[in-house]
Amino acid sequence: MQAANRRKTIGLLMGMGVLMWCVVYAALTYFGGSGAGIVPIAVGIALISVWGSYYGSDKLVLTMTGAKLIQESDNPKLFDLIHEVIIASGLPMPKVAIVIDSAPNAFATGRNPEHALIAFTTGILDAMDRDQLQGVIAHEMAHVANRDTLVSAVAATTAGAIAIVSDMLTRMMFFGGGRDRNREGGGNPIALVISLVILILAPLAAMMLRSAISRKRESLADATAVSFTRNPAGLRSALEVLASDSTVVQQRSTAVAHIWIESPLDSKSVSKLFSTHPPIAERIAVLKSMESLS
Amino acid sequence: MKTIIVLGVVALIAVFIISQYNRLIRLNITVDEAWAQIEVQLKRRADLIPNLVETVKGYAKHEQSTFDAVVTARAKATTATTVADTAAADGMLTQALRGLLAVAEAYPDLKASTNFLSLQEELSTTENKVAFSRQFYNDNVRSLNTAVKTIPSSFFAGFAKVSEREFYEVEDPQDRNAPGVTF
Image 1: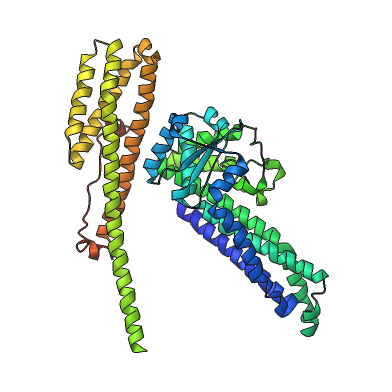
Image 2: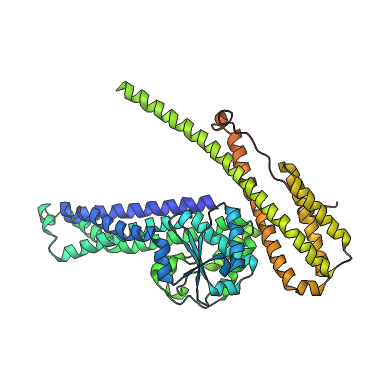
């Protein structure tokens, strides 16, 4: 289960690479030599913006979600549960934060296990019992163990670079970038049309790939969480609580939507291809099948 | 040209040997750490018991045999040193504690007391921690033993002075009551 999820993530990341390559190829076909200079610039811009947020991910996410760091004395019961999962997983102790919000939800971030941060809304702490909360903590620590912040940073960098390249090239078309086309004697008109279509559709495809990677990481985190606690029933019933709850977290920034355990965006407003989370019913079904195995 | 190739091959072999050696050492250290974690959690539980027994005694004076079982099991658990002895004592103590909590069920005043409630929470998290540290230890012993037995890491086990380790197996009657099959 975990191995299959990992393979799919690698496949999707390779898909990103292929897409990037298509965009570069399209740029070269359409503009000849002058298009080539744009690619390193775009990759550079995307790298700086995404990797900046990757290194400061814990602090950045804290400000974006309004989470407040807490100490062991603030909530000893929660820390007891976190210590249990820490022992089961062998990971270092993360920083812990609380978001004051009645919608039940949780997230994990941080560039590596040593700089991890897990956060819970006050809603999830109120709504869940011991086993359910343990499942949620295990799911968040599974994100830490699988280095999902890194994976999503890589995905975001590539998607961002693709978006910048396509954007710059589409602008160049309108501002007389066609000179190179004439120099190459017009080229193959079909190739030109295809490359134009690629440039327009690439950012969309990159977004879809990015969401698909996020969905795979969610399923992987569920599986890893069960390998920590050996108790699929806890996480399953926690997801059932989340599914039956209709409230969503107040601030609904799409930029940080992928980090929560349950998507904070209204599921109806986002189509499945662009959704950062697998449908919660699907996740419950997978956990149920694990329960019948054990 | 030839010397470069020879040097490259030698370097590759050296890197391979070092990584195999380091992996075995790392696995062995992780098992040691996992074992230390078990001991920490068992000690935490042992420290919790006198207080728990006193609290229950305050409400249920006539359950002497249950108290005795807990105290004996605790004494065994605190003196055990080998993996097998510790595991056996751990299993006994887990069972004795279950008996103690079952006794508590019969005394509503006790169950309602704040002291007992906080002890119960602490005991259940400690039981979970003991169980998880066992699980983590056994997982790591499994990967160490696999590395010691399988090629190519098995070639380096003697050189690294790493050998197979013992699993931590707790005899728990509750885990063993598999449904009886009658024909």
